[in-house]
Length: 233
Image 1: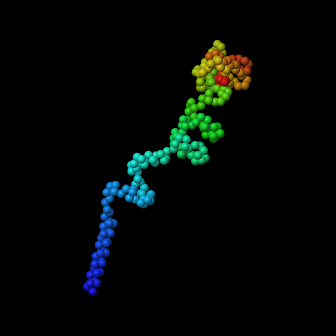
Image 2: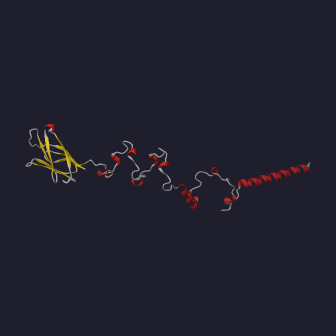
Image 3: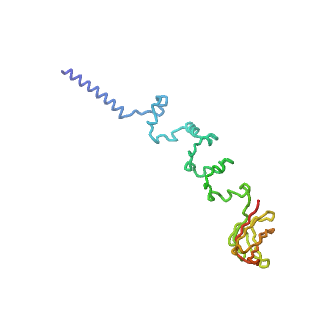
């Protein structure tokens, strides 16, 4: 009986020793020297993305060669993306940053009138010099000047009007306009308060526009009037 108890005690001692060793391994991890384990010591697929916590690998953990490779992978080469590779409506205004597309990125004749939706381009989207008269095909007529002239010759408001005056001796108004040149052909339209029963006489002089106003009886009158002068092509 004494020998049996001795065997039991020996077995228990061995088991306690094993538990102590296991506990020491689990509780006290082995210190691994720097660079002691390399990728050659790791089996294929032993570390997957599931084992990597979010944010644990940052750009500073990657060497220059890895970064260069990743950069090349995500670079878009010239002409690698053409209009034929872009699905309709796949790019919206929310995908385009401010000033991402400028006039330098638009090839001549790449945008046709059929590509522009009605009302998509308004005056607020055009700069003051975005559309010049000589950019309009045909150029049938150009508004050279327009304005509202008071009966005493004062310019109430005007476009390209330098000044105006009334000459009591010659009984006509003289309107000086920016860009006026007698070598061009002009058409001027006049309206004033006396209406259809009255009429006007217009002379496109060498340096200015001269306007005479008459009542229905043919008498010279002074009156406020509106005018617009067109330069013909």
